[in-house]
Image (cartoon, rainbow, N blue to C red):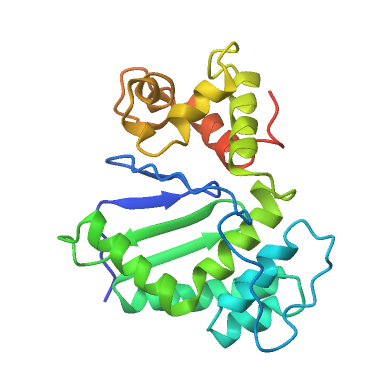
Length: 235
């Protein structure tokens, strides 16, 4: 039987933002950083990561926290290969499928979740099922690390520094006021609850929400490119 899908999809770009056809659910996922974590150790010697690697501490902490043998094995040599992350993606996709969700991922485009035959599922229920798979597969100990290293933040910039790069990319591409102060930008772009502010609705919502009167598809695509990989996007 051909699988039926609800007329709704939720896509998460590499930068951590969600966007959908009917609504925009924006979740600012900060770049990985060592803040808030101790230099955890496990019963073995930990991953064989070069101490000079920008993500050496994140490798060690992720390895120590991981309980999935597959993920632990992928982290052990201090590198995550494309073949390894594709293998993990297959495992995560199966977990999501078992919960009635169709999940896909590509290195260039990020993640997409399609709702299955249960058309009555809410976004909150979908995210709850996704969280269950996060926990069951050790997703958070490998996927964000891989995407940060291989795309959005290879030098492991702090959250504020990364988002300032996003701002500069927006300025370079004529998507936001060139005189906008970086600290002012952070106050509504990445601060808790900032997406409800009048500033966010003025500067960011027209670049995200296709139902906004000021929405422009070409500008929106450029916006998402800046969010995903600000340091490689130039006008």
